[in-house]
Image (cartoon, rainbow, N blue to C red; front, side, top):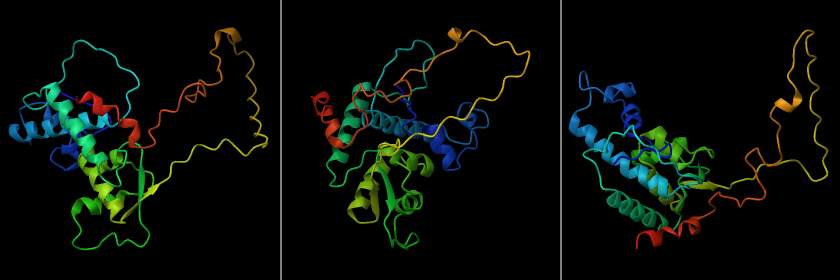
Length: 236
């Protein structure tokens, strides 16, 4: 099987970021290919395992069954049970770290006073420090550095323990101070003469709670690794 998700860089993203290819099409055809078949197979397999980890470490709200259009297999193809078992092992290994991060939610920033150009530091740590601006997650850093999400999450967790990074607290969007009067909407521009408008009943109407924030539904953002305890049951 193959695994594809926007939660982790795929084989083409990894090869393009490292400069091995210049465009996604260079992986598709045999003629003029710059990456050998064996190398491409390894990259596909590595990205499939990382994608499976990214899906399990994230949040799946809906599932849709699609037929037809079979995706290209990961290397020679991997068994679903093996992919899931390895993904669960990685989730448990990450959770066991003292300063484990949530790959898609936690944002980090370089600690104050850290020398970003210190010699002798592993390359992956240098890259993470340069990209840790308080807005990027491990998933964002993985895309920018051509590393797997799991590798970045493990390294970020260790760097938090070493005092090189600091976790940025998540802030709920501010809707204004209590009792504050919201600013009035700007008046509509006058409609030019001769313009034919449809009936107001034909236009879509906004309803409270339809902008993605529904107070009747529980908050789905993961706060810590306690939300992922259910995956231990899947491995049994």
